[in-house]
Image (cartoon, rainbow, N blue to C red; front, side, top):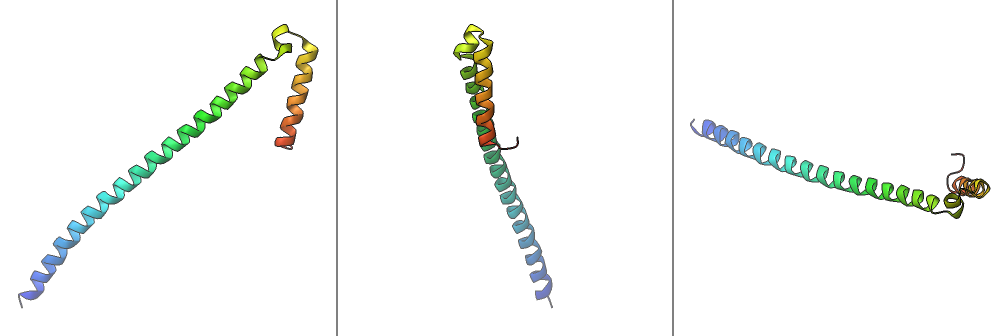
Length: 91
């Protein structure tokens, strides 16, 4: 007669402890995964920006750009356009 309430109370206490432990474990895992993903995306964006800066520096260091030779600049732009069309067709 007294066994059923004792077992029920034990199961309730065990369920509450398990729920609290699993909840905190899930929270830690989600936080860790989110932090890792943010760091990876940040690195990816930084790398992309570095490549764009390098591309700008290379274009500015071009002999035609330094001497303001319009014909050489147009040839360089045309070459870069054709190169981009090979890499990203239809863009």
